[in-house]
Image 1 (spheres, rainbow, N blue to C red):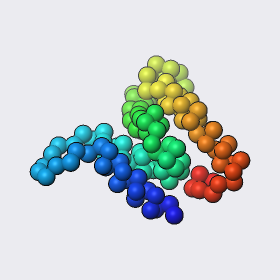
Image 2: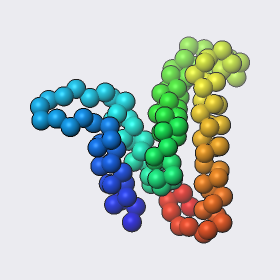
Image 3: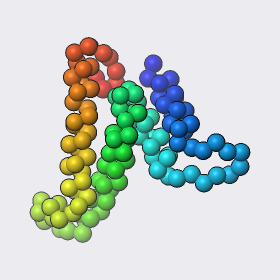
Length: 122
């Protein structure tokens, strides 16, 4: 049940994001990342999340910001990380991504709990 839905999400995403062409055509990497974000979101949140640009954008940005934040924190001795995090914009971004994700997921989880719908989130 899950894999056919993910397969369909990948097909839909590629159709939405990639140009129709017969020859070699350059593709923006963001389109590939969006396809990955949509496919993984489809498994856990159905089309409610996978088709929501706000969600897929924050998934991609969270991944980027968490990598950048970890790299920037390495510039400081571990002892100073609790303080250094306040001076690294990517760390602040992570909290924003988390707040947005929570705002989008909590209603979905509450609805699933109310309807007893079975999926990968449970």
